Picture 1: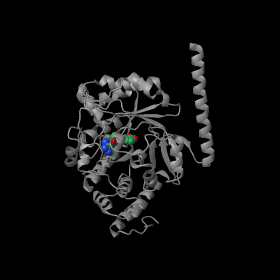
Picture 2: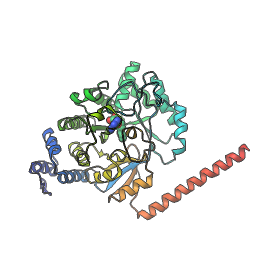
Picture 3: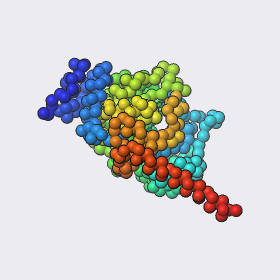
Picture 4: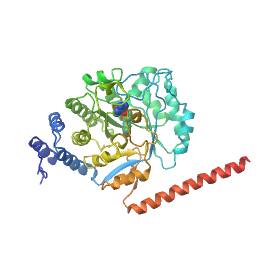
Length: 404
Ligand code: V47
């Protein structure tokens, strides 16, 4: 029966919200505040799981074979939550040329990798051409890989650097190979918090305007929220509502990724600490409930840790991101997770959470569904890996023979 409550909340404040969820009604700002204020985590999780079932079937979990690339850590801005940025001249500051990037990553890019995730510092002196050339070099060297590159903050920086409009910057990047945009740089939209954690960064209206323009040009993009530092519940809900409004307008967002604040080696860490697993699961679930028009919610395993990412799959998330390879931003800020997982690790992680892994590309086109017995999948992937290693060895022998 429509509107019937099929669960029994322990927190009575959640009863009207549960009614709305089962009736398929949109939740309000006040509902969001009530959800974040409640400690009835299991009810909130069940409601989010119900919405995920409705939107995504509930049985399947997406992942991809991707590779993160951070072309430079030199950054003109000084966001106080960032442990990754460096000033020019710092001993461990770096900037890789487009050719260097291609050579660095070549050994890890198999024909199964489908996405490069490219974000980095806003270099004060390298021009826009450098960033365009990074995309061109990657597109030329690995034409089968989709390029998910540059946050709205980077797009706005390129626009300021060149005097070009956001639209023109995006068009030039699309021409160089840009396929989709990541969701970074959103942090917390509310000005009371934004000016305290990233005063130099594009403001909320600008971040949203860049995504609106990208959607108008046909790009699909993601969105994030940096939570668990000095923001309050109202700031989180305000953030989610603003994203929902833009999605109503354009429909261009694919995935929302709540980013758990990591407090090590950054200024903000003097005032904020690690948030709890309870808060993380609640944030995933409330995001699923508030963002009723977002197709996917991502439990970014490198940030949550694999065990919490597994739990998140029962709290509304339907994506765990990908193989990553060489994560830097979170490891500078205290992440203790692996820097990468291979395809088999991700499949095992999803299967042992009772879900079916689905390998996707950047646009959520389905490439493979791993629903056969796990032993069969393991045997096939291991055999494929052996064949690849043997072929690489054969190539090395032949090259040596020719050069001798
Ligand atoms: O915008 C920086 C965040 C973001 C810290 O679109 C931090 O699929 C926590 O946006 N603690 C970049 N977070 C990463 C990002 C992302 C990640 C995974 C997938 C996708 C996607 C996007 O990282 C930044 C900032 O919000 N960040 N420092 C920190 N100390």
